[in-house]
Image (cartoon, rainbow, N blue to C red; front, side, top):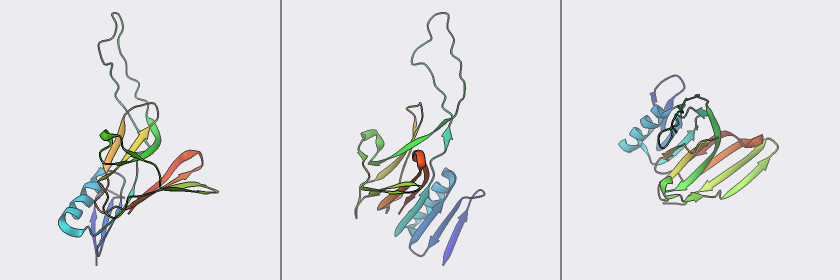
Length: 161
């Protein structure tokens, strides 16, 4: 039996028996999937995640500008630079190295394996020329992630299950 919770355009959450598949473009789909997981539909979690391709960052000086100077913002999007996988909250800075990597003619894939009963695993999306990252905890039950890169280390997909 398939149950579907639909959000905006390309956001879908499917529950197929004891398996949950998330296909999303924003955080509304994540919330819906986590709500389904909390309701008892999460024997096995599978997620296709997307870091936003770019973000706009509002920067500010840590203290007032020197006398006679003013600050101005130029909202230039910061493009996605890479990802990191963390054992626990990224604040603790326990970044995990990939378990293995596999090259192909079109790029490569990096794999992370978390074992049978892992601590909470987090995904961090890093952006060029900013210290700001987007982070989120992966759904309970995720045992591994695979990140597919095109040439030039451009992220094509992030698959976790």
